[in-house]
Image (cartoon, rainbow, N blue to C red; front, side, top):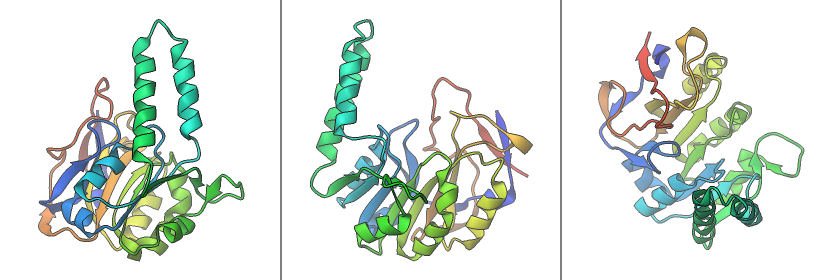
Length: 250
């Protein structure tokens, strides 16, 4: 599949991008200099994959504040029990145990899982992005966001907190419907767009724009000048079984 993106999504060329997180879904390209400049990671939306936060902390051993109201230790224990009943699929049971052990081993000490969603809601299960930054108590935060369309509800708060950020990875959903909102956000954000990747778990939508785009912004990288051609050598398909989405520009 081919996706044709507007010119404002052309990424600036930098030579220090590395892959942080696992191959396929869950990994993103990030500037090394942004990692070095960071004192805290805030991960918003983790579900059953904290490989990005775990990999980031291996590059620099700093605290992680992860926000997701859909999971907990009890949630993963229940998943193990349900999987144990599937005697026809023992690998599902083993994967559930592996996920649970990874959860309890990573989220301890300085790495904290806050059982709340980030967004604008009066529900007690939610807190604002501004509150999340208060918890982190740092002006050198690397922010990762993957919250299934709710990102549009907090774009104003991202801009408010941008002066405290070293870098940003954000997954935009339904991009073909919200391309103008994305353009407005990029124009207001005082950071360089250094990478764009299409998530092939979704398709190409209206006007040949990929429905889901992963964007990386940097505050500290050294720009090499001009733009670069995609895909980057460290890019991976989010879903190995699906056709990849090739990005081109208007």
